[in-house]
Every structure is written in C-alpha cells, then in structure tokens.
Length: 129
Image 1: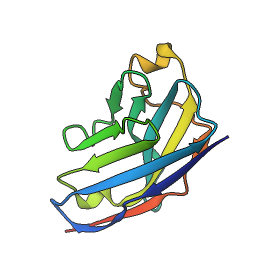
Image 2: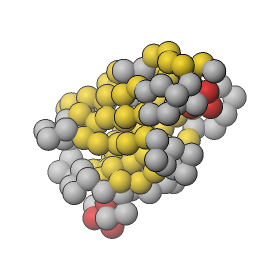
Image 3: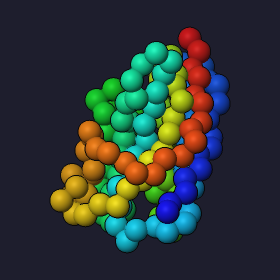
Image 4: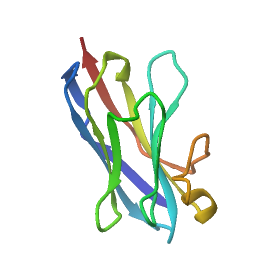
C-alpha cells in the first residue's frame, strides 16, 4: 500500500507561481508511474503531468505544456509540480497519484489516459484574475 500526501496549494494571482509537493510512503514499487491530476467544480478530472520513476521520463497535457514541470527528488519519495504563469482556468483541486508500472509505460512518461491505484487527498489551487 502506498500513501500519498499533497501540500503546497494556495491562492495566487494570474501570472504567479506555485509548487506542489507529494510525499510518498509505505510500500513503494521498484518502478512506477506518478502523476498530477486536477478537478475543477463541475468538470471531469483531468490528467496534468506524469513521470516515470526510472529515468524521469515525463508527459504533459497540452493545457500546461511550457508552464508546468513535474519532477521528483533524489530519494524518489517526493513528487513536485512547479506551476508557472498560472491562469484562472488552472483553479482546481490537485491530486497526486501513483501506480506500479513497467518500461512499456515508462519510456513514454506514463501518458494519459491511465488508471492509478493510489491517490492523495488533494490540495486546492486558486488563481485569481
């Protein structure tokens, strides 16, 4: 069982930046995909960015390419999402997710859509215009 705890959300004006963190604990698979999702009120959950634990291959949704960066620390126990040039439409609850995965998924950065077994509780990001 993997536990995920997000932090770093908050309120920011358009054009600003935030960095989200997701701490992993418990039984962590040898290789895995990790991702950030978001869900705004009245909208479907959307995959934002994903990363493979070995090699750090990444994948981004078109809506955040060039503005968001997903990364992990050297211990591979913390996942980050650096969000720059934030827009009001980025306002949502952000969740991190993890799942065991092999190279067939990892070599492409674990692209969406993809199912995940483990989820955090979410952290709110609000961007005002």
